[in-house]
Structures are given as C-alpha cells and as structure tokens.
Length: 198
Image (cartoon, rainbow, N blue to C red; front, side, top):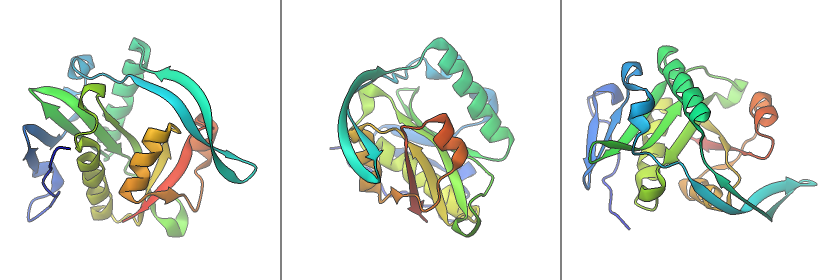
C-alpha cells in the first residue's frame, strides 16, 4: 500500500495548499477548469457484488450485482454540480497523477441539521485504476479539514451501499447519521446515511 503524508494545514488556507505525495498532486479546483476534458483520464467504473442494506431496522449484506459507471449525461450533471458547489462557496478538491484527474471530493457550503451542524460531503470518487493507494483517505481528510474550518461539527455522507465503499467509510471513522437528510434519502434510497465527527 502506498504511503501518504499526513494532511496538514499550517498557516496557509486550503485554497493555497498544494500537496504532493508519491507523485500524486492534491489541490483545490476552480470553477473555470471543471469541464469534460478534466475527466478524460478518470475511470468511474465500479463492479458491485454485495451491498449493505437496512432491512427492518437491521443492517444486512445482500447480493445485488451491477456495474456502476457514468454516461456522458451523468458527466454533464456532475460538471454542473461541481461548478455550482464552487460558485456557492463550497469546496472541490482533486488528486492528479501524470497531469490527469484521478480523484476528487466536494463539500457543500450550507450548514444543516440543527445541533449536528452538518456540512454535506456531496461526492468523493477515485478512478478505478488508482484505487487502493490512499487517495480516498487524503481526499476525505482534506474535505473534513475544510468543513471543520467552516464551523461544521460533522460531515454528512449519503454513501454508496457497495460493501467496499462502506468499508472505506468505516475505516475513516464514519458511523450511521444521527439525523437523516430527507432529500438524500429520497434521491438515493439505497445509500447509507453516514456522519463523521470533526
């Protein structure tokens, strides 16, 4: 497994921070660079066999094989969403290898959830060819640090139910959300609603 440097914010803000770890460059993205070309070397594909589901109040693992991938229409929606995240004060952060985007995360800027003070980790993805190298961990830490600086108490994650995805979030310290975001549940009823205390 690749070794990565600990994510640290010193005197500089995240917007000014560019990290490099084992030939992977991590940096904040700007709205004007988010277009279809940015994703030319990104492979979304995920072969899913087992999924985590909540049934009758209990978490169970069920077989539900499918291939998760993005169509061109999905990429256009993603581009619009990421640009909107930035334009509304949120955070989009990427991981680059050999000049190509290989991972990214985004956090929305609006607090919700009352006492929980959630900020929404709206996405985190690592290209299929670069998974298992610690990129997701670095992106998650950057998102958490940004959210903490913005005054959030927790990150909220509507997470893909694939067991591999759930194992990642569990390893990062995420647990079931104390308060479910109704909009997320309605949009993705099979997602697992998680939180991460900052």
